[in-house]
Image (cartoon, rainbow, N blue to C red; front, top):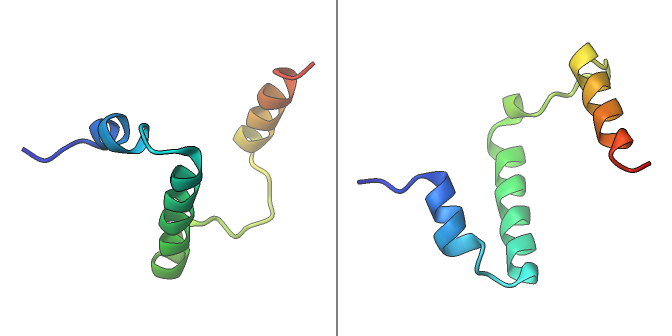
Length: 62
């Protein structure tokens, strides 16, 4: 049975030291950028959802 992403994170990634977790995140993000440009939204237009997300995030840090 294939492992789920959550299980991989819980069993493997979460126990790594922070520096290794950052290296892994960098590897994953760099791979996405190089192989699948459609994942990245290149537009500079903010949707209403983008604006709501920004407001909600900023309100967490009063």
